[in-house]
Image (tube, rainbow, N blue to C red; front, side, top):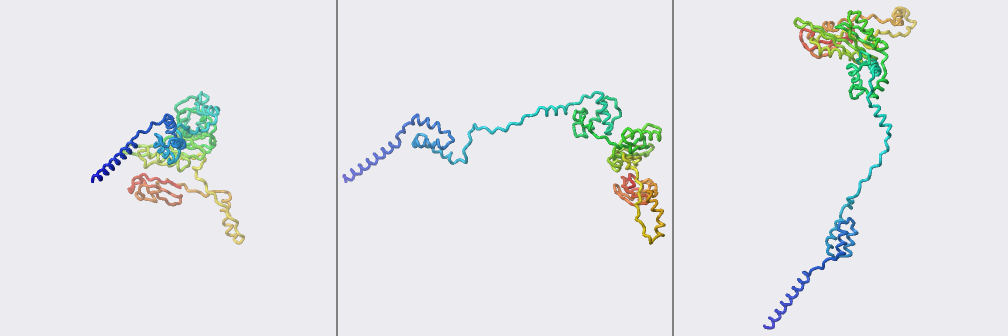
Length: 383
């Protein structure tokens, strides 16, 4: 029994001694890293090259910074791609070719304003007049009329309407082609005269004014058109209560139909009796406003087997060969004649109807009166 107690005490002492030795061995302080190791680690800790970090681990596998070095090496080797150094510069763009100073000088000269001397102003006025801008004097003075015409020219050129010409704009004005066929419409009140197929604007306006003054005994207003352009005079006169109201408007267009439409629209917009607006006079520069005479086509030669029929047709053939047009009947007023075809109240507002008659095709559009017992606002024309 005593021997067993002694053995137990000896075993307990051995276990305690082993435990103390192990704990002492684990808690033994690690020697501090040398200055060379510290300097080595400082040189590679921020490196982006895995080989440099691996060189530290090869030399100091159990060094003070070995754990950090392994983590750093793992991050570098597992990254998607090697980072570019922060001080890397972007590639420089290729150098621009040298600029020719003559190009800038030519551009500056073209955009420079023109010195508007009296001679230049007179030239500009003349050229604007023959391009059909509203110019009435060629006195070399920069009047409001001239400035407005220059602004209209600049607007037609899709440029800023400043009223001051640049060198480039003056050059373009000098290169502009002038029309060689002109017409004009002169009017006073509801009476007017026309001239057409003349070589220049001045001749057309002079001729139209002379005819209008001869007809009315008064000075007339005038508007000119060129090439195939047309002008139409629309007027209305009506009584409201005990007062007579009238309006006169001139419209222009690239063809006769557009000129008529423009004149009627402006007349209805300015007249107090819009349903009474009618076309009073019209002209086209090339004379296309006049009805063209019909020319009979030449008939083929008749066979000898029908001498009687051929003899009967000889007068007609002679007339056709001579180019004599068949006699045309004078057309009555379209609106008055429409009342015999479509009685008052039979055409709805804005309804358009058309029919063929012995005078030609009559077309009417219902006026604002609708189905009433009057022809209110009905617009009719021959075609």
